[in-house]
Image (cartoon, rainbow, N blue to C red; front, side, top):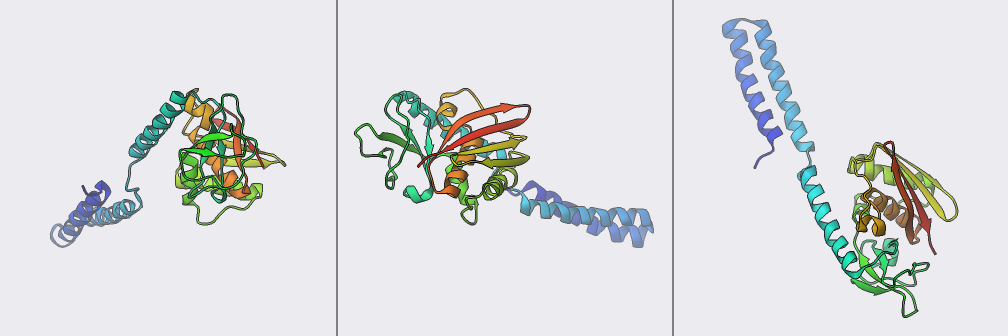
Length: 244
């Protein structure tokens, strides 16, 4: 099915190209001629919009996101995992960065040793209990939207996160980042995806927090965990803990 903007643009251009000369040479009306020329100009604008329009609608993207999240949530609930996920940079995983959810009840991942393989169940340490479920997250996939790896400064993390949230995905209006030695504070204004008290969100965070964690982990080259997340008055506040 052709793009509706392109169909509208071609129709306006064709109608205007016929109407303008007829109005000028046959009817002799300057106003009607201007109307025909305006239709041609509007038609070219619609054709330009057709080229800028995303090939997949936002509704389809949201549907695919919800499907993936529900499948992951079902897995976490079936295994009764409640621990906070740890986001890994691509340098510590085979392929895109991933998130680890500890298998042991009450176990918190404090350190990740070596490179984690691209498997569902992985070992991240030397102890017998240091096992986790490795999953792909929305944040890990959006890293591919960046042309280069972001730098480790707050300004670099803010620019990269802002580009993804406000530019590429258009799900927020602005992003601010503050950083200490072991904490990254992210404030997102106008988030269009909120936080829900669901199993998936409690383990892996909201999609916006997932993106902030993935970008921070990639920029710093260290595992990152979502320590706190809240949303109030059109602003999301995300606290990320940087691990060794």
